[in-house]
Amino acid sequence: MTKVSMTVNGRQVSGDVEDRTLLVHFIRDRLGLTGTHVGCDTSQCGACVVHMDGKAIKSCSTLAVQAAGSSITTIEGLAKDGELHPVQAAFKANHGLQCGFCTPGMVMAAVDMINRHGGNLDEATVRENLEGNICRCTGYHNIVKAILAAAAEMSAGRQAAE
Ligand code: FES
Ligand code: FES
Image (tube, rainbow, N blue to C red; front, side, top):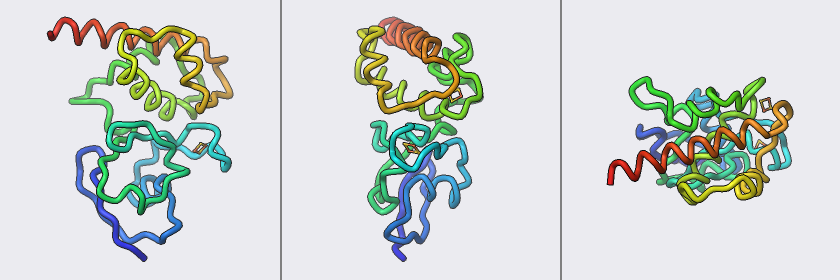
């Protein structure tokens, strides 16, 4: 067993893990943050996406020990003061989900995508960047619409603040 410490959603946490413990299991089983999902065992579905030091990663293919000392954000850490994050609000407004199983990973991937591309996102780029996230329900169209709407809103917000 190895003791690991990291920041999760702004809170310092630590725990003993086996060398083989996956980050997603540490997050779900130890911390009880079950918004991060496991949808496959082949690293293909993206339901497990969280941010590590601000970048989207698949927590099913990251060891807990690799995350030691890092700052992790999960879907539970996105809303602030009871207000949905703009990407969460855009998924709701644009019907970007049906069963919701893929949604936490989609939203976390989308936030990273928007941080990287800002208001320059276009439909083709969104679709290409969603390659690592699988949805069994929506046909993706409304997810893409939601991400483009959130990117436009977030970049307008940034310009207004400048
Ligand atoms: S659980 Fe499917 S990619 Fe991580
Ligand atoms: S909304 Fe059901 S898997 Fe995406």
